[in-house]
Image 1: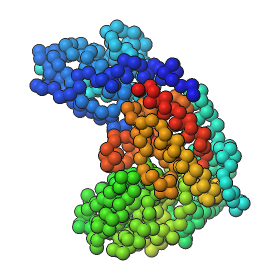
Image 2: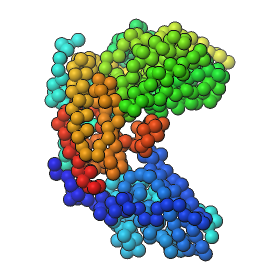
Image 3: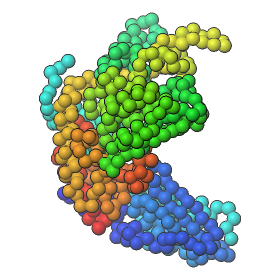
Image 4: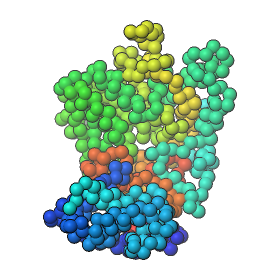
Amino acid sequence: MSIDRSTPQLGSLFQELILDHYKRPRNRGELEGANAEAHLNNPTCGDEVRLQLRVVDGVIEDVRFVGDGCSISQSSVSMMTQSIKGKTLDEARALAGLFTAMMHGDADAARDKALGDLRVLAGVSKFPVRVKCALLGWNALDEALKGDVA
Amino acid sequence: MAVVQKELDAAAVRGHFPALDQRVHGHPLIYLDSAATAQRPRAVLDAVVGFYERDNANVHRGLYELSRRATEGFEAARGCVARFIGAADPAELVWTRGTTEAINLVALAWGWANLREGDEIVVTVLEHHSNLVPWQLVAERTGARLRRVDIDGQGRLRLDQLDELLNERTRLVAVGHVSNALGTINPVREIVERAKAVGARVLVDGAQAVPHMRVDVQALGCDFYAFSGHKLGAPMGIGALWARRELLEAMPPWQGGGEMIDTVELERSTWAAVPHKFEAGTPNVAGAIGMAAAAMYIESLGYDAIAAHEEALVRYGMERLGAVDGLRLFGPEDPAERTAVFSFALEGVHPHDVATILDAEGIAVRAGHHCTQPLMRRLGVPATTRASCWIYNTTDELDRLAEALEVARRIFA
């Protein structure tokens, strides 16, 4: 049997950091005093994410999520919460744009240091059927930040 | 008919399916998703291409040679598929796009005409959405009520509960012959007997049965039998509804258009005789011819040989997959009660991740809810991974599946 983590494609998908976030999700749970939230699911595969944010003076003071699904959807939202906490709404939206571009195969976006650790998810773009998994949390963020957020 | 083989020659059978002869991500394709759709044998592909190359014309209208041939091929295909499932009369077989459309036909044509407020429709928790949602729609519009039969811990229908649910208000029992998600073979004859005792009609969703076992609709005693071509090697977009002739004759049409009429005036029309009353518009002629070719192909292998081959796969697969650490197999424990469908959870690895890891090895499986969300909730899982076999699969392939699953466990350990 030849496959293992060294198989190039699979290796780029199931990286250590991704599996770590899947097994030990960060910022998981209910957020008290949340003033923005969204609940998204993917009807074809059943993945779901509920994202809650506390936004004060245009800054994301805190963010939590609960969810259920595959390693890609859950690690992506976990990593997202880390990278948007403390950011302004504009910064978070810019990050979302950059991440989405990376998922759609934009090589410049994938090299952008602003994405930080999120760049480990770049390999997902090579698995077209899994891109929607990685974007689930980010789509929830987009949904939550629609309309009037303080 | 050709001499029926006692045993399947797996290598020869595989050679009949051009799509199996390819590499995926550098590995020989292992196709374990036949419960979603089967691959097509050369005989079917040739029949479809042959129709388009030689006989292509619209049916039931042209007065020229090609149209005559097309009509003859189309109606001969009906006779062939009707015989294939033991129908007494080709006119009892209505062509549809597939099982889903066949069930919707019954829900709309029979359901609307026969269901009233307070009537009851019995379904089961095993049903594919296509044998559940049409009944929800018709129940909503007629005021009928849905009742549901549960399963036991092995994914078998609880017939004791069926007995409790059946009463004089029960108009219809809608049940799958074989569960697409678990492979459970349901005791349809017994269910029909019990339903008949209270005067209820029975619709059987046979999509997952016809590819694997000889179906005799008269012996089953049901009223409606719906099945698809694409699960038995025929093209996508063709399927059939079988119903007893007097039922079809009493049912109003469900779609209007050409082909289904007798005479048309501006205000009103009269209908063609069955089965054409239910076949508005230009039919899928090539599909019907392809479905007949698939039926003949299956008969040339012989259902006894198919059953023996698949039973060996069930037994081997249950043991081999059952030995994978952390794997929980759903469905009946007795191999005799299931088809070669292996639906499972792998501890610590989400089904989609399992499917991606298997795909990298050239192994095609389905991961998800299998269009059975109520069943997934009943099992307490968001989704399962499903490996489903047909005539061309081998025990070697199940070995490779098990090995790849062990790798998945190691990646996520």
